[in-house]
Length: 299
Ligand code: ADP
Ligand code: BMX
Image (cartoon, helix red, strand yellow):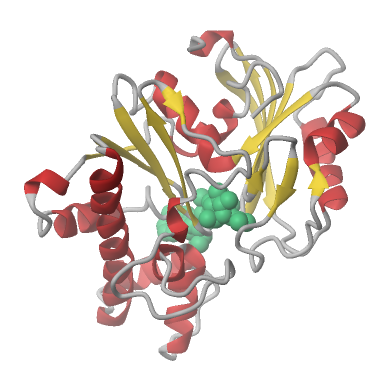
């Protein structure tokens, strides 16, 4: 397990909403740039955007580069969306090879939620857990698992994609093709879609949170439905894997009042199925730091 102060280089975080780059020196972010994600860009265009933003944080030829991306990255480095409505044009490209060509050095690649899982486990809120789940509630609902000190991986890169499990209240089909997924109820996109379905025109989930904090009952119900699905998922993970700690991150996971709603719904589960719930200690920086945790370019 690397110490935080051994991490130096340029890290990229491509989520469904934002693309961020950071220059990291001895585990501290010294420069950071963020732009909106182009969800319909091809893999080559995404890598070109990453290269451009990396140059804005001062990319040098001697820098290590690590990419953390939404979507699954298989053992050979091929990148595919699981939710094809979020990243709609990736076309099965080998991201590790493509990014290594564009950045002119070996580049490490892994899933964004797995990156945050690694950093939270190594030097954040997951430290010391025997069976940890990281859950990001953001554009989608993603995750990662560390069991007995090892990040759970699968050859097709799907392991840890907890948002594609199903929830009791699920009705809608999500961009993975599955019906009633946690992501289809709880994610930022789902919250926005539900508000619009109910006749409240909003651009993003942040506006629904603002309406909730202003006292709107419709907004409270939508956010509560999201939190209930995530709480149910945490109990399911505990039943399957003996999870003892869930680390919660992402723009929505870390939003004001959200964690308390999950906690409330976890209380209705029998004690055996209630993991400890803690907020991500590294906040929105966990993905960026985790992108540099991988030492060898394999994931
Ligand atoms: P990404 O999914 O690109 O990693 P985020 O983690 O910021 O990005 O998640 C994006 C989602 O989180 C969007 O739906 C956005 O509206 C929502 N969001 C971000 N910040 C907040 C906030 N402070 N309060 C409520 N929702 C937020
Ligand atoms: C989705 C899925 C995951 C990703 C997670 C969080 C896609 C495009 N995304 O479940 O791979 O880790 O969202 O990503 O299939 P974010 O965009 O919410 O940060």
